[in-house]
Amino acid sequence: VTMCSRTKEKSQAIVDELLLGNGYQEKVTGPNAGQGDYCVPPCEATDWKLKAGDNAEAGAADMIVLGTMYEQAWPILESIASDVKGKGKTILDMTNPFMTRPDGYGAGLPKDGPQAGILIHKKLLDDPTVKWAGAYKHILWTLILPNG
Image (cartoon, rainbow, N blue to C red):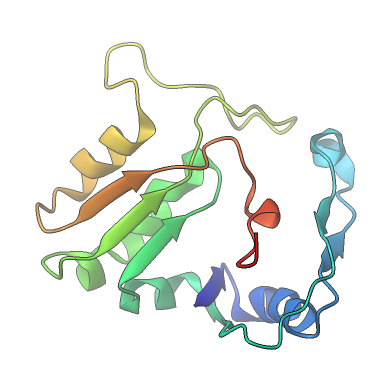
């Protein structure tokens, strides 16, 4: 499993803490403070096969998890589309266009289009070889652990 972020350094800092079994904590400050802090509890991680990468590396994966804000998911997916198209990958879309944040994300979907973010991403990517799944729409990535 590769945890990807805009920069490998950012994901590496998170992965290092997780692999040490420390969990991951980060205080959210500024305008997004109202959304709550990142708080992955400490847990045994000896058998985890986790590494860090940047968003560009996500295209190499067999399964890609869109676990960012809905409004940011398509630009990221578009940037790796050439590594995805025609390769029969699986995309788990966890985005939620209705999960509001203090910074304005989560404003919903246009009334004149599909009313599911996954349908919009599927249409934009336009790749019939991709298998799509939608799940965990109300769960932030910090709450999903391999050991439950």
